[in-house]
Length: 318
Image (cartoon, rainbow, N blue to C red; front, side, top):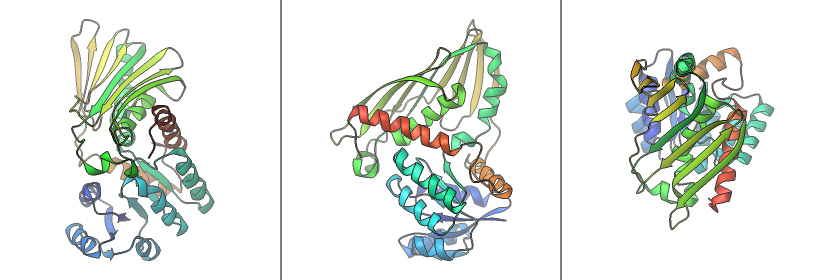
């Protein structure tokens, strides 16, 4: 049984706990919150055996196998350092940290301690990745892709505050950058980007163009002010492939050059989509690995470097 401890009791922690409860061979073993009352309520709901009103007490005393960090962006670095001080394995919610420097420090500390750590960017672990790769040849030679992700969430308090690492990029744009790299790889020649900033200085919407080696291009758009269609389209010389809901893919369709749909592929039934990252962690821990092959440390760090560079160009600081 893989025993998971959860730091934080917010919405994403609830979703993870509900997912774990429906999985076999894994359980929510412990939960910690700054409010012990909240932790007790969470534990009762998800059958956690241990309850803590202190993150440090849980990390120090719990008999868990893996700590899932579900706190706000700005706290990830602090909480991962705490876990690593006690030799704990970590699954940390995205974004892993708010910048690449913090991530590199965490990875170095994890290597020193011999601890497993990975980023919980759920789309990297999902089966659609392999389904696309197995079917991509149907559209011929791939040359470009477009992808967008947006929700009308501009009034969510934490997203409005630079002090809380708010804005669109770390919440939504990060998924698009990872998707482009899943499809086209790591060799980016040039990045062009622009952002619309709020009065407080966080990015309300972003436009990013990535030019890859071999003449391939990805055009990405994210927004926290509009309900975008969340669609990705991959274009080849024999047709194109559409992915419905890039944030949790539901269906993949491929079309020929005459725009006639040739096939629809529906994604496998899932609990929530979070189970795939848990399974990847379980496999890594069983094999004694310190990172997940679905999302290697260097990939997490490189996407953070790209985002650091873009924010600097926009004049955006947390």
